[in-house]
Amino acid sequence: MCQIEGRALIIEITESMVIGNLENAINVLNKLKRYSIDTASDDFGTGYSSLSYLRSLPVEFIKIDKSFVADADVVSESETIIRAISAMAKSLGFKTIAERVET
Image (cartoon, rainbow, N blue to C red):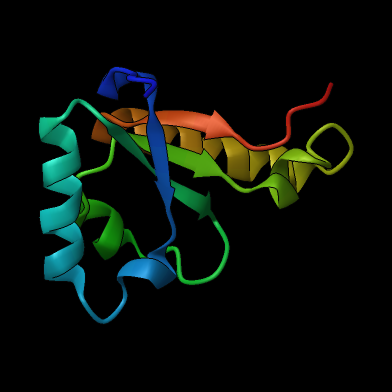
């Protein structure tokens, strides 16, 4: 059996996973935190992207959706959205992950 430390993991969740049972999701995320497992809000900026969920969920990372990252070098609005999400995340104490960074 292979054993790894919790801090070596980041589990991604989407808002659609927690809609309808926010209290249970918070309990599960807090249990993961006790094992030093970090969590990330995946696909941020698409779908619901409710700031109230972001405020409620005990996550460490916000993962910026690939739809913004893929064309950020040619579409100024995508770059602006990435900067805004990053600034908000930093202000709230979250780390950010950019999905599918290739250049």
